[in-house]
Image (cartoon, rainbow, N blue to C red):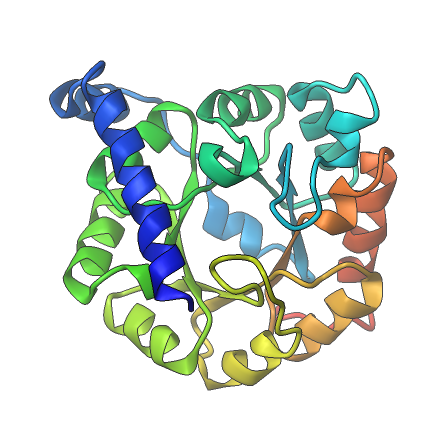
Length: 274
């Protein structure tokens, strides 16, 4: 990990959080989050038969640029979410990071309101304020980037998210980070094949790390899954689900692109824990 770049991203995120907290206090956002309705069961969605597919909605990518459904058509966030659900995805993720991806929490709220699937907030979450904020906008699962959090904060943020009924997806890139996630109590681990600065991809990351994880841990392959063959390879290495973005967001036919991956995940030849 490029620690200088990671530090710069975290500092920018904290400045953004501070600005939002000056408008809605931590006390108020916490009260609002605890008054929200029940979360949707992200763990149950991951445990459905086959290798599940999580499709990420995002407007932009620092690597690939503007995504096809937003750049090349008049589709709304709600349209895209409904197409993903119709295509057979198990969960939907929404990129909410504003600084690098042009994302927003309002996109996530709109997507969740349009479908019945659990919603994964995709952001750089480093502060308790963000966890309560994510719940207010409909998050059912949040990611925590293990490599940018010290052990105490990682454990504390997991506990806080779970106290609100949300599941936590601990994102790891090395065996050491996987060990730290387990020590902090993570029960869902996503192996991210992209470096934190998203500049390079290690397509073998999941196959290298996942076999060392306990069988009871839910495992997600994140990044680098673009084809049905990629999904089956991830499932063969123990993936309960894959998180795909470009595989779907590079197409203007979101439903068909989702269906191709979802069908592979449900094929009888695809390895599955159930």
